[in-house]
Image (cartoon, rainbow, N blue to C red; front, side):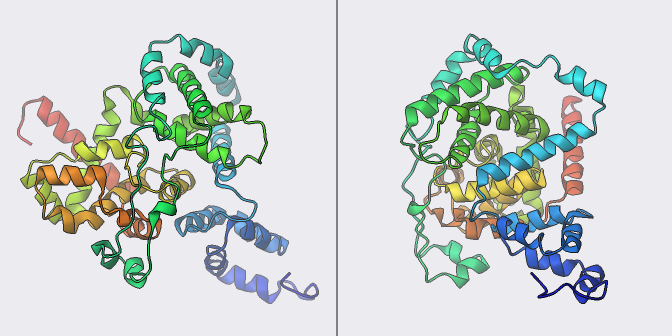
Length: 405
């Protein structure tokens, strides 16, 4: 507690300080893990009120996840994601009138009903094919990549320069889709979840990339289970979490027919490159290399497709996405990857660049302590994305009308 005895004067010096400069509290707690932040909230009622008012708690979580300070003790990532997504769903439902909410959800089928229907649906064969490749059976689901001791990436970021003498052996990290011990069960549950999703989101059905996302969510939730616990609940819990991300986080848009949203994301990245990395953008343009040839898979799987991407890095990216509820982090990460790869890419032709961006022979840049701070250093705002999308839409209209762009 802050005091050995309750202060005799109200407001106390502590409360006066918080009132005059609430940023002090925000700065302190942003360096703490979630469990420690919860303890700070118990100091007194005034501290709790400061942290839960004026959006400060959101700012606290935002700073915490960006610094990678969320987890430790009894707080696990799977529990955190589930609780946060449930809160987002609750807040969204508050903005919907009660009669509209009942009308909207009264006809939603249960998970067993959707599963039964999905097993006999038109996507069954494609889902079965992709599920058999999940959880590390074939590349790009697993790799033995190691960071290089002499990588130039170390000299491109403050973290790399500060730690250039230290080994960044990423082989000890759990890679994004390493092989689980109960692979057959996990594949069976993955297939069931994809069957049900194809029914609930019938406009999307099934699209490659969904299997990566669902598999990663399942592995993350599985880590919350105690040893010997019945795992039969894992399948349905993963389905409900995925469905909420599809609906409330607009993830379903990434898998729309003809990949319309994904193609727009690639064009947005292309425009952002001309803003942040003009030299590299000109180099790609010189070789007529379409950004979508390598970035489509990044966005389609939320960076799970990159073969040497450590699971710790992917989870950190997703932490930021789930807390901030914005795709901006994915654009920032894409720009950061290209920046850290720029010294190599500028010395390669089109074929060499594609080989590099599909394999990342130097995975040092994918270490979370290098990639995430670099990504967050790039400015990508909602206004910037809106302006870029308007330019893209105008270019598309001119193209359809046969006018010069």
